[in-house]
Structures are given as C-alpha cells and as structure tokens.
Length: 89
Image (cartoon, rainbow, N blue to C red; front, side, top):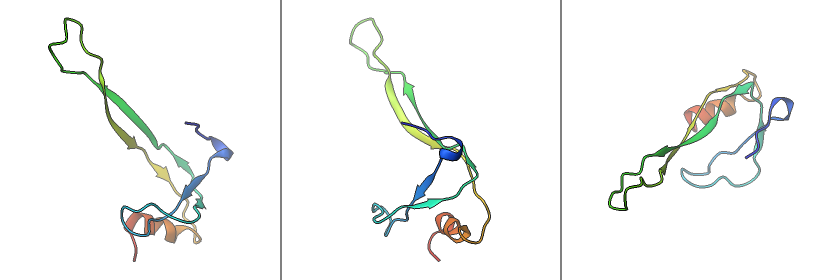
C-alpha cells in the first residue's frame, strides 16, 4: 500500500449512517497536521504437533492499527472532529 508524505498527504473521511454500515456518498477531505497511524501484523509460533521433527510455519496474528493524529483547531472543522470523537449530539 502506498503512503503519502508531506504536501501529498490527504485524509478522506465520511460518517456511517448507522453503526456498522458502510458510509455512502462523497468522502470529505479533512485537514490534519501530522499522523503516526499505521498497521502491523505479527506472527505467532504454530503449536501443532505430530507433523514430524521440523516445526510448522508460524501463523499470522491479528492486525493492530495504532497511532496518533494531530489536528488543527479551526472554526470550520472542529465540529467534524468533535463529532468523530464524541458521536452525534
């Protein structure tokens, strides 16, 4: 997956109409200052036995998405960020 840096980075977002449903319509471009969001998927040692002397290949762990996002405090977009953080009023 490609990752944009600097002036090429953009954040697109849309709200779900109800919980668990995919957002429909246009995604809006949202300003942000910086972000460290990323995903990581580790490996777990496979504990199956009875397949010979060689260990089995490791299996994939869950995908962890972690990081921070720094947002600007401006009058145009603070309502959208508050709705994303706290939910509908």
